[in-house]
Image (cartoon, rainbow, N blue to C red; front, top):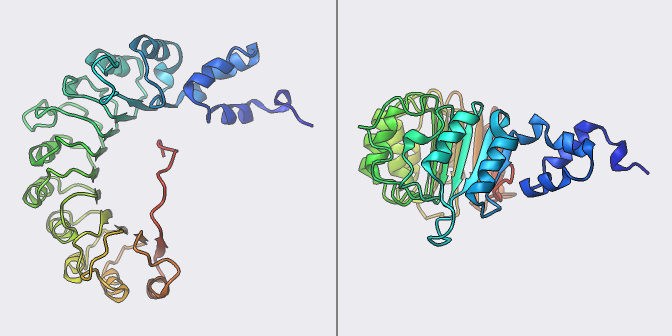
Length: 326
């Protein structure tokens, strides 16, 4: 029977990569060989620290000892709901990430109070910034701020960020490299604000509007007016009607359309109406319908047969992936 000692280093590294950070450090004490493997740069490309209430001293140790130039993706929490004595993210830590981690491309912050952390302190190498259940200040994304901040930022995810509003949306225009925007549960964004924001963000190639108070019809209308080059649209079907979907007809660059339930209303387009609209989109290659309750039914057959050039995916809403860096 094979033992751990018989496994090649590449297999051991793959196994170690599934371990939480604390356990990775613990196994480095098993033997000199494992200590060497734990020091391998490959193992520290993607780091998830949201499992722990991490003291600042420990975080600084990880940064200096293990992550540094190896780090590509970092996921960390801010303990917003843990009380005033809980460790908080600081501008100094954000600046240190930028200085010591020159290859950091993706930063995911969860449940963090960023009201005292200026956006100017974030690493300038970021290409993706995700904020999940975070607090931000009114000045965080205002247009008047330094336009040279985060010059490489291509994707921003704003998931349940309660302070995010119309003014912040318009402030995103200073990120000239921005191509992907995800709005999830940003209930302060209005239909007028979305329309005005997309008018200036007309270079976006991917837009997701999920679980917001905006109706799907008004969102699609704003997209059809301002995002003629958009390639991927993903939105919840709340307030979606056949006339609302028809505004996408003829979209020249749209490659992927995803509609998510479960709020299906009587005005919801029928499979035949969805098919008719999709047939007018010359580059559409993926149609995805999640959580509509159509999986395995006649609707799936109609769409698959009518769109032979498309990958038609009809399924229940999937669970959130644990591979957060993908």
